Image 1 (tube, one colour):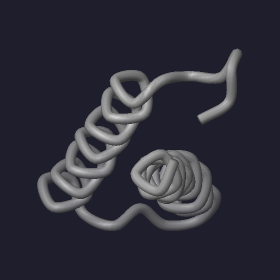
Image 2: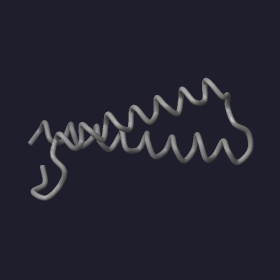
Image 3: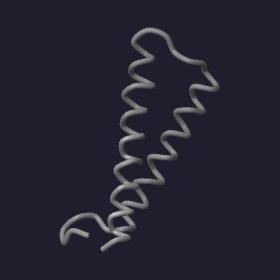
Image 4: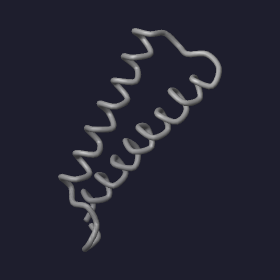
Length: 68
């Protein structure tokens, strides 16, 4: 792990927070329905990309720290 980077606890927190965000987004879509028009890009595209990207990045870094 990098000397000045986040530790395992920080990566674990980011992973849990991003998975909770994805779950909340999916729950909102299930409750309110799939939006149409520009709202679809905002809700599914931007929020999904943010939470999904954060989850993937956290998983990659957690697996890297296992090897160190």
